[in-house]
Length: 283
Image (cartoon, rainbow, N blue to C red; front, side, top):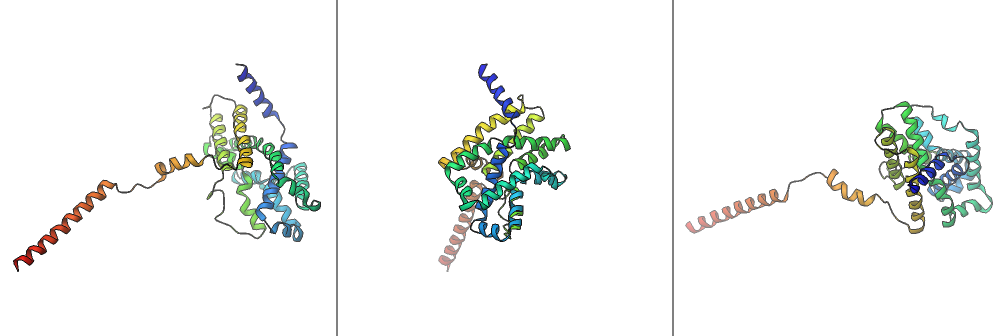
């Protein structure tokens, strides 16, 4: 009983934590880090030759979830940039990650220790981002079960979905490289989180949403730490390998049918050979 009460209290405290500034700054740092890593050797050249395009790419990465969610719901896309303090904060992070002396900020965050400091903080807020997407979709489509899941997942992994647009701004076109063709573990976790929160909103789970979010966070954060330290892979792979052949493999002719067909063909061939032999003997 005490454990349950303490979990409920922790969940409530987690739900009341403000996203700004700590969690949002961690999010901006990792989004710019992923932008630089994705751009590769061309990142520095882009930053020096076209700072505006580089900044736009950074802002798309930082606010990708809001942009894609608003676009899908038919709401103003530009509303993703309506908070001045968030734009200024993201711009400061972008500037430091690209233009700090001797590239010290990027080098520090790229280390394993830097990632261990920033990733858990960022992942601590992922479930809350997914919940905000589910709530945003529920306002427009109160009975839209699939819509809530889609918007919730997009709100949790928006930068992954807008990456192709961001790459276009950098002059890179990779149509086959997207989150639908090759879904990441982060996207699958966000879909799971959105599904559970949507089911709870529909009244099928007897737990408050903050407890679901906190419980999922207790799984997401250790998983990300394990990815950094132990290089573990996608936790959904084994389930997918087991279910894919049963659910999505096209059924073919059974071995019994094919074997019987082979037997009949063999009998016909033997009969033809016997007929030829009998004719030769008759001659």
